[in-house]
Image (cartoon, rainbow, N blue to C red):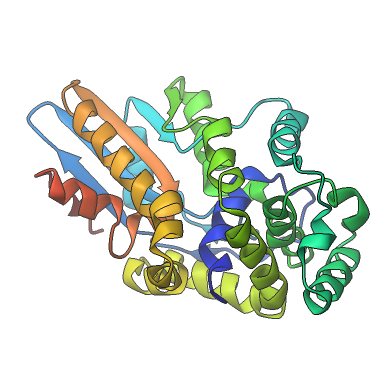
Length: 297
């Protein structure tokens, strides 16, 4: 279970706001992967995103920009509320422990000490978090250290795409609601929540390398390597994979199949891990008799 936070951290970054700015760096050219699903009168683009990024990554051009510009609609996983506090309020409400057990008391003594030290190191008040279920702290620790490393969700692909869509007057819709996406974490069995939290704490020293590798594979358009980095660990926990990955991919594939009945074009942007590896959205589409074609430059 040690590598489970790789995917969960990526999902967490879509939900938690990371503020602040980082110093500018020379632009690095990226060629992230893009797929096309098409019938006689409908074109759907599938683009895998990274929810948090560092400055200086030049990705919104070439085939990706052309596909976006030619689309009528942008479809995201969720649409973040305009009020930054609304997301946090929703999460806090869904994270409150209903059984009266303090979060710290759910952890073994050694794990508790490591957890509290990690929270202190990242300026997160573990005593306040004691009122929540473990997934909330796991998410917070999955994201808080990234700001120190120069990552920001203000530079994430979803932010860039949504602003571009709004500026262009395109329709923006979502595959899931905020409540649904938070619910994937809130609905995890307590044992898996604790494992997620303790594995996140144990993985903090590798966080910088882990995200650097993820970004490298994404920028290079290498979904197979990205899948290995993000998803393979979930093969040993099929129940968790079904909830967080393959089940959602299957739902999105059905949405795409239905969308093909409507003429026009749509640019779908979801976390890159959903478009990579076994059980991906493309695999789910294939099971429905629909081919997703990789687009080359």
